[in-house]
Length: 78
Image 1: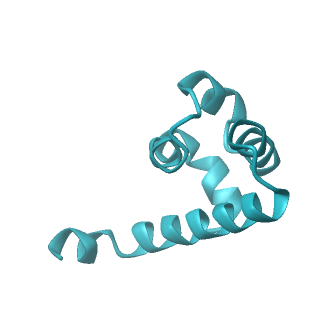
Image 2: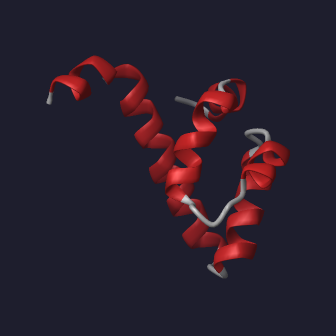
């Protein structure tokens, strides 16, 4: 799933983002609205981690969304 798809499906995906980064509030996630740079900045600010660490976390999370969207039936069966 590319970031345009994530942004377009943000209402459905923000719950997953909330699970991944639990310190983010619902209001913050609403303001982020799927914008990658906004999400990265907020994660960096709240968690106090480096930009490189944030980029790795975002890439990992993005890949998990791809796996979940393409293989959701398989995931549910296992």
